[in-house]
Image: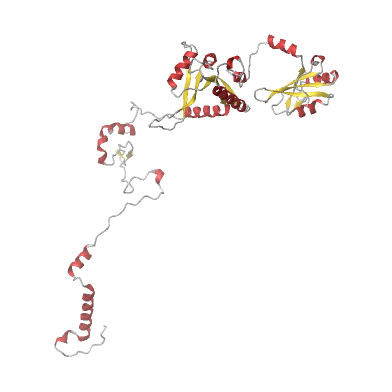
Length: 412
């Protein structure tokens, strides 16, 4: 592979600087587009040193000055179909300058925009081992800082993650530091003036109850958000690695918090939906033009009779009238309820209603009377009755005289 440093002959007019590249564009695709103008020495995509992502620009050096001039002329075509395109994006190509010229232009140019992700704040408060600022830092604190720096680099590889300008993440908090103490500490670190305003202050807990405590144990870190970036920056520079805040062996580790743009959008959508929810209707006092006998009037009348809930269903005054044949009007008569039992609401129509348990019915009056008139042995009584009936049919009424009377049929 060729070296990624620019050669010293960029001022000879053979090196071009390419803008408006897609973040997914690779050097092979750019080289394929530029080879139509001449042979190339190299094509280099500019990468961000912190994240390793493309910055959307690249350098390319031709072997001849004429090839570079052809490339510049083709890129200056402003028509819709003209110009040079890579991955669907129209390239903006200019002649590159030397490092000395670029440094002069950078010092003379006022930089207004520092990127939407605020990556320049990712290095704020960084302490490297072996430097003067690392003197007196314990090995445990330095190991924590190294681990946090590696996590930050890994998270910033996601293009949706950015560095907040007003929210601080404070590590190495003692267990005894609560929200109130952290609030006062950050407020005094930012100057403590009337203009300093903290909009958020939280100490993170494990939320597991210990010995009856609902909050639980502190996790040793928290978040503080200021209204202004200047106050947050001042607080970070005062608290970070300060040996006089807690102890010399356990110093605060303060950095700007990393935020996920996708989660913030979802949070904003939830807040917007909560604002759009209809507010509950307030009870309005009866006006002059409101007809008497409405539901609100009925509620006003029965407001003092809440203790009489046992009195049952309460009727409502009906304002509708029915015209009679003689032209007079009479009050509309309300029909009786269509069914008995509990009220069936509209939402419960068609559903099977729970049936109440019926009490066991006793014997009927006829059965009770029969049980008292007959003896207990019912089977023997029934047999005796049948024998007596057949005897009367066969022998007739004169059986007492001892003479047999001929009958036509015994069963007639």
